[in-house]
Length: 348
Ligand code: MRU
Image (cartoon, rainbow, N blue to C red; front, side):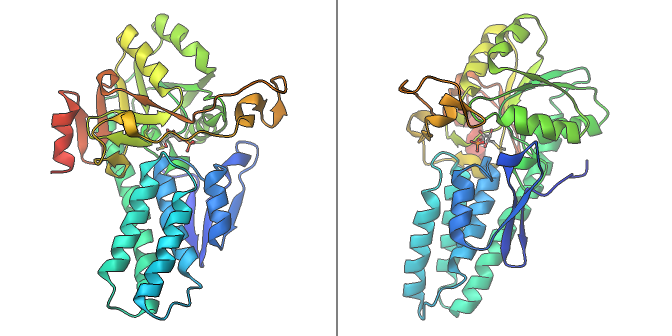
């Protein structure tokens, strides 16, 4: 199950990213050598997907500090705090971004006694460990998740929770790659995922690279497919999971979960532990990103709606835990019985 491309890398002092806004037309890599273009790449979804955002943010800290002239630790931390605030302002929902920034801050504080030049090196090492851990987590999630897949399964997925969203081969899609590798015959339905079409542009492209039998549908066709008995399982990723198992993910995930419940179809979420926000009791307080109205009023930058119409454009929704059959993490499969009990194993 080889990885066909590298979504995010550290290359000679630069962050190399696939510009996902150019896919599937062109596979273009961009090099960010400063923090500002990296912030912009996050904001504009050139790099996207919760785990990849965590990795990008941690490497962003390294870029932000590279020219630091701080002479003592207290000045260095002031700069670090400014950099963290700046990167944290890029996107609000995926908790991996904040988790990675906090981890970078903790690492700096733990090494306060060392010379600044050495702390910078330690921070780079920490960012690279975040990336390596994500790769290992992807593989473990794939192994656990593939146990849920039977040969012949027809799986529906939403948005892109694949290699393009992680440093390795993804969360939800990783499960499919592993199932295929194990010789299981699977078919995947891909929601186009309006407004930014991560399903049509990214997931469809990725699945074809991995030679998975993929069929693209418009988001509003999912109910019909389910009613026709053509969907055996739904598997999606997550941007933030509260302690009780409520899941924030790409807008449209909640409607799929409601449909799955009605049609008695298992609904699985695959996400690393870094996507959990144990500070939140439930999903009510998950910040939901509101994006530019033009994303809805236009398709691929071409205006489709009349000028002057009001637009509502939340990028994520929250699926209540009661609609989720199980959450797959690198630490195993957590069933709903209820999640507030089973998920405790992850944080106590
Ligand atoms: O707005 P995006 O493209 O960053 O949203 C991404 C998603 O919603 C993914 O499903 C989620 O981050 C999981 S990625 C493994």
